[in-house]
Amino acid sequence: MQKFDITIFCADGFRIDTEITCFEDIRAIVDGNVELIPVKNSSLVIACNDQGFKKLPQNATFPTLAGTIALIDQDSVNAMPYADNLQ
Image (cartoon, rainbow, N blue to C red; front, side):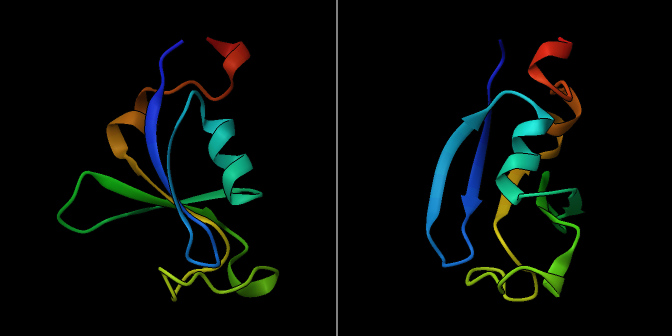
């Protein structure tokens, strides 16, 4: 099973560098439906909860976003399966 590097920025500012295996892992990290936002002049995308400030606290690292935020390479997002059991 292929693993993909991801950096997680918790709402309280805590940072975690880890690996994931599928898009459902991103959904679990951001606690809901995922919105992908391209980072200008970069191959990275920001993955965040699409509910924004409705239910989630402001993110300390990305104050214009809410909840837990993840940074991942766009090519990784394109290459990963939706779920582990859908390989």
